[in-house]
Image 1: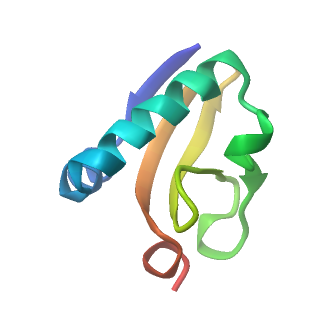
Image 2: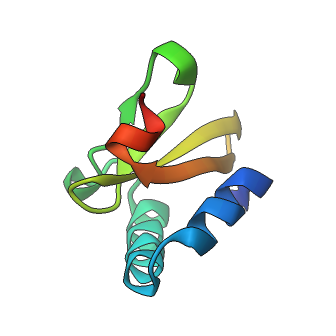
Length: 86
């Protein structure tokens, strides 16, 4: 699996507290092993994010990604539920 990060994602990840950044990388490790692990709550999005998917980082923080090709995933944004979906 090839994982890349958009410019926006990198910027928003840097804005997260260090604890949240660490939590993202923990969840990323889990994602690489099993993208549909129950802790990730991997689900399709609609509206502005139609065609993308989201994984749970913490109760309020999610990371949005899109499948570029079968083995290429690009993370496009990360943030709180209210920031991402409003």
